Image (tube, rainbow, N blue to C red; front, top):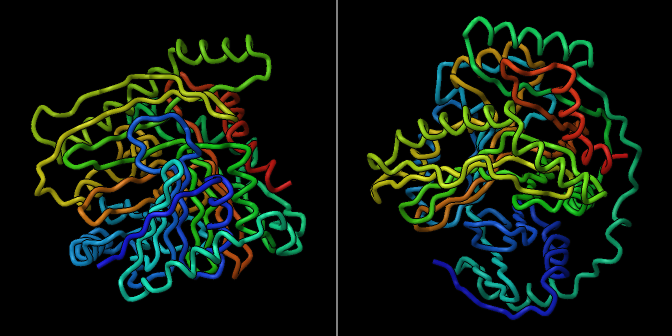
Length: 431
């Protein structure tokens, strides 16, 4: 079905930029970059998939059933995205808030051309219908001039507006706390949108800037015609490796400091903070419950609890939960039984999602959804779409959202500060 060719590469970083520049000619693009972040369960340093041979695009109704059919029929590499609002396919929920981006709820494509980079080895996989283009394309890629990226388009200043004012945010967070004290929920992830209308940006250049100041392990550049995602996510949602399932939720954030002593102190404070630990542990319990729906009995285990990982912008508290599944279990069914991810919803999950919908003012869409891929043998790997800029070049609407977990110990003012800390990189890129 695919022809494979391997090339040795002298400068992998340069090649990543060349591949991204070359990809601009295609309607469908997914680029995944681990930024060589030291992490378990990483298969590739960089992956690029372009040009749909087949594709599926749908709203939430029967979305997982349609994806299941598509994935089991193609049995090939598939790249794409799952929007948060697929919750309406999983549960009896609705999304009635404002949506300026108009992305589909689900979109996947079977790429004609695929590039897998690990160290200095680039594996190229083309569908046989176009495999005679491999050498020509590779020559074209390595001749891309990456030093004039900023000359592609004239950028206008982007005026970013806040959908929920600080005053309103504090009121809504207090309302969330009322639900918690009443016993409706233990925790909910509450998000707010920042947006710009009539925004003219160069999506690729914006992504490269965002990735450079963040260097996260789950960065994504996604393009579907006029819809773009520029994602600097530090979080894995779900991965399947043979019969093993891995989930790595993030809950708990603290500032980075240039002063090494202050930075260590910030890290230590995060690791011992009872509020942050209880937030994380609540979500670990939720993920264990979600994974148990598809797992072999007794196989759900917590590999890591409340570990601190450092990124360029922030320190994060991450846990790793794993399970084993039967080899006959459908990959799509595993995703469906855990979606949306607990770190972006709350506990109990359905009550949290209902309250989120009531208090937030924007449809989340792809934000707090997932981007990733299926392999031909049914393995998969998906991130959590956070720390991301979304853009519709057709209606010139730009959006990014940030959120934090509200628990009974939450202080609304502190939660607001955490949101602004998470928004820092996006503001920096767009200023």
